[in-house]
Image (cartoon, rainbow, N blue to C red; front, side, top):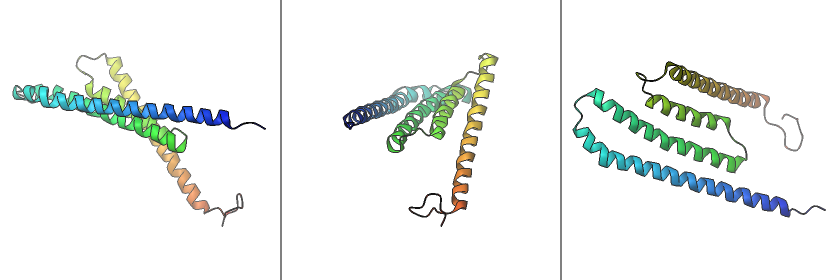
Length: 163
């Protein structure tokens, strides 16, 4: 008879690792948010006073948006860890969302006037690929849910028997 001890030990180690990852993500999110708020309050206000045009304002706003997207990136990563903890699988939809936020942040901060044209094309291909992948995943989830709803509920206790 096999002892359940190794399984319990592995489950405990997995739970400890997940808890540590969640704690680190929360710490990084709080640190990022605190840094963003500090930069806005202490440096942003001083810089805003010296801005004379929209052209001077735009880089500051874009960097602030980039910082905000970092917070959302952390929150989405935290959500994917939580989903893994609850359902014991990784949702591709969440991973694509995290990737889209990361690429979106990169695109927002990209200096198009001075960027290598291949970098711009690469960013465009990434955006289109992630959007296409997300659309495919959403469509397949929607189709699977419609197929399941159309087949009706399965009778309890009788495999494959529809009520």
